[in-house]
Amino acid sequence: MELALYHPVFGYYARVAQRSGRAGDFFTSVDVGPVFGELIAIQIAEMAAILQATARSAVPVFDLVEAGAGSGRLSADILRALRDRELYSRVRLHLVEASASARDAQQSTLGDLSDRLSSAGASIPESFEGVLIANELLDAFPVHQVVMRDDGLREVYVGSETGSDTALNLREGPLSTPAVSAYLSRLAVTLEPGWRAEINLRAVEWIREAARRLQRGFIILIDYGHEARDLYSASHAQGTLTTFSRHQAGMALAGEPAWLERPGEQDITAHVDFTSVRDAAEAAGLTTIAFLDQTYFVLGLVEQWTAGALAGRSAALKTLMMPGGLGSTHKVMIFGKGVGTPALQGCSFKVRVT
Image 1 (tube, rainbow, N blue to C red):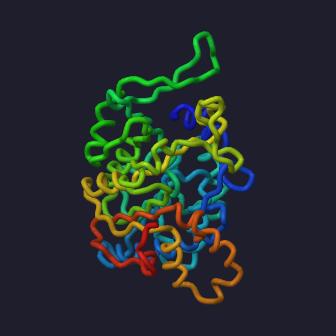
Image 2 (cartoon, helix red, strand yellow):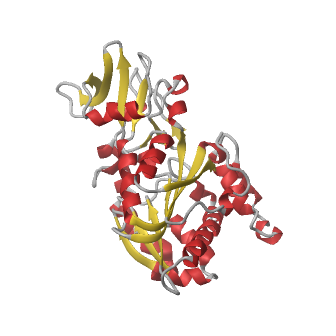
Image 3 (cartoon, helix red, strand yellow):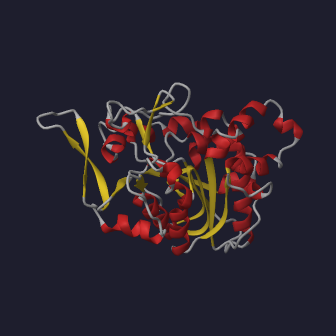
């Protein structure tokens, strides 16, 4: 999965600056149009005001960090929405993106907003104070897949056919690291024989590192997934690892999973275990402020708009909130550090996970 998605030459994300949208392989909230960024800007502005109220300097710098930024479209939409606010002049934008192709497109995407860009690279800034946002990042981290057999837990590995340079197949073997079994033990998860599951150790490592680098402020995660009790259950007994190509989820071919086919040419993704992300974040010093469906997050922010601001945006808002679509499949998890547990606007309608 690491090679198929992130190889610097042949990786799926490395070769093209943008993979989402109607002409791409999958659809994200950013593809709905600027309305998503405008809503996020409302929440970010409130968070900035909370930080400024307790700042050590009269005009504190505000770091806006987007992880998994791609070409920078979401950040550009956010900055345009903030342009008429005092906050805009204090923003230092940091775009974090593994793909060199996407990073090369960021200046063009930002255009006349580029004066706010402070850094662009593959890693989160070593130290920052403000807001970090990651929209559909964790689901694209490489995972370990395991399967429970009668004699215990086995890990699933990718191999190649004897004498073949291209045909890939699966084989099972001992766990590659004790961290995999320790992960399930922490959750008190018991897999039944035959069940498959994905273990995203990278997501846990990422939130720990993000918590360390955040000095004071907020982290907003938006992704699809479940609490561990639901993810590691009979309803997902075959795991959630899948592919997307031309807006279609992959189908098994000749008994082999779709993610073995055409490596580097299709997206590979697995649902996020929000329980483990939250547990790791809190252990690293963050406070969980909210966990809710994107539908309710959007509704809380829309309430800040006037009737005039809502004009002509009903179709885009419906897409962002639609049950069974982006609204209910995508969850919003918000953490804070050094800010207490404020009642945020994005949580003002209802804090609920379906």
